[in-house]
Length: 150
Image 1 (cartoon, rainbow, N blue to C red):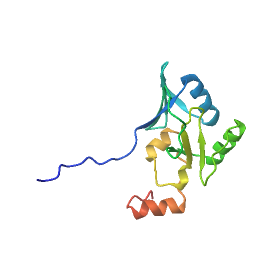
Image 2 (tube, rainbow, N blue to C red; image 1 turned 90 degrees about the vertical axis):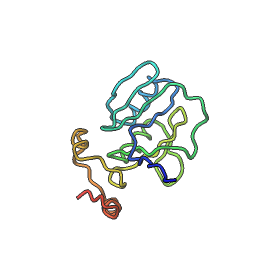
Image 3 (tube, rainbow, N blue to C red; image 1 turned 90 degrees about the horizontal axis):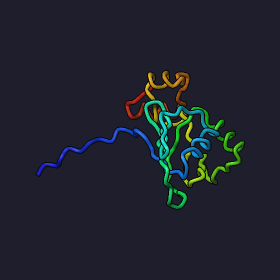
């Protein structure tokens, strides 16, 4: 019997985080990041990331995350580190810039220049980030996969 065709996973549209309170979550993340709010209701909010978004959903009930996390790509990792310090939020120990939000969601901060993840030029332009570039290692990784940004 022939194997059925499988869909290929091609990326993420959004990540949903459970939080205790939408207004508190927007205030917390607003201290750390410059973002545009796509929409908001009493029980949810949607933070725009260009062609992707983060959904904040009211109702966190589980224990804080340990290893489970997501990597949030930013244009300036040092600015996030400074904002965490200014807000009195301690980064978690380890080789990466990870922190927990007040509801236990673990977030790893990743600099755009260091990774294979690439926004299309039109999306970067629309976000006002057309100046962002990849470092040599990220370009090599992309080139090795036939995805050279040049």
